[in-house]
Image (cartoon, rainbow, N blue to C red; front, top):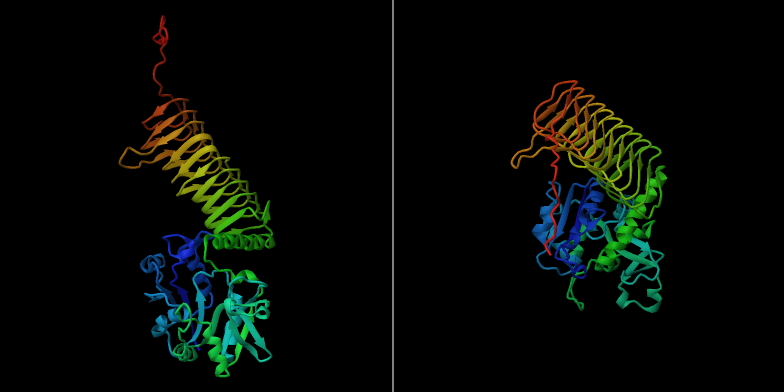
Length: 452
């Protein structure tokens, strides 16, 4: 049977105390539902159907992917009711896997084991969590799972059971459709619950197979901001362990945040309080010092990022030295052996091999040639109030401190620019160009005095 996955994502999440739909709250920089969809895709389903409800249009807009189908649960009347809204989209010959948009930690391997057990009847994913405050307890006998007892209905002996129901199910679409017709809402909440599937299966003598996850963290769900914060730390701990196992040196595994995909070569070292967002690639021997933020960036082998740098949508070549307190904005490309120092900002520019801008400089919409040195306090004036213009500095130039380069402009190869110059015309190659106002001293001048 072909696999079709239903993801229940209609809940409001009242305890989140937020206008943002619960499944859009971020975990590791991405909506919780995005993590669940990625897990679902890893199973290569024929269909993915998301049941949405609260903030329906906002949720749909966040996921324009064409491989997602949507079913609206206009009124939230329980988990089984949510599945009922999706059944018109489910193929009669499908094997169905039920997931939740607010439980993003479940692993692909656990779901594969759940699916392997599904042909026997109904497969239920469970976890060993002693004294869980809210999950229903799994009651077994030698034949398998017999029932799920909600905490509020459990006896003292049943509360003592460590195995809990995570709420993930795998079964045939035919069985699911038949059992959904029998689920009622004769309970205090007047809602339709998927946990009734177990009782219905047992009543028909259909085997109920409990598949226990290896790590209880997979059972982590979100009902409050406190839950979300706890899950974030668990997620980051998992990422840190993977990095350590891959040979990355972390100064403190508890003080790293990966909010996307981080790929590291050999002998990479990361200091404390670093944040990695989007897709970040660190080559062999890269060193990232404390308190840096890296977003969508590639850093080649041997480069060093000093403390308090903010780098985004850029590329850094081999053996570069960045920072401290440097910023690379989108569209920046550094060739090998480039130095970008403290309080230097670079935007939409390329610095070629061995170029240096070490202090208090802004380089925007520019091409900086090889072996060029840009002095402290230099700025490229790239914006005229309407349009951006480019500055081209050719190879082997020396730009004196506090220079102002007014684009569009070309500084020819081997040029020297005198400190304090404002340059608004192209310069000749190999010459010193100075553009300063005449220095004047006024004899007899006296400073103003305050009036009594």
